[in-house]
Image 1 (cartoon, rainbow, N blue to C red):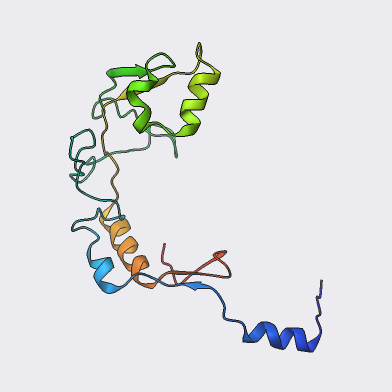
Image 2: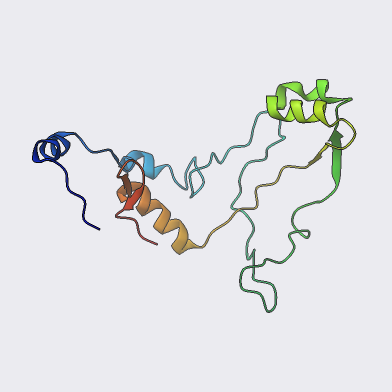
Length: 156
């Protein structure tokens, strides 16, 4: 299908600046793998220790389960599944500062059925060296264009 527009409108559109979200600076990209994880999260944990520091993620995980291409083995040998506590409508006031308004509303709306189980925080995410290298390069060269609809100059 061919779309046409008046020449004056086309000329005006060409004079408008296009949106291009540029890559990060060299100094920002240099933080990857330093104070930031190789994919840009903070390495440090929080002050109270409820979120641990990232120490490199799991080594050798996840692996495809036998006969599966995209389903992963269980993480239970590296991620404890012991329930610490459960947030309910009855005790949510103790955790109100850590709950979004939406979660609080759900607990109030469905007090008998909506509950939030809480487990120990872990940071098991990892990638291969080639994935981390591509991420660092993309931080410097990849950008969004076309109102954020197009990713250009990225490597995969």
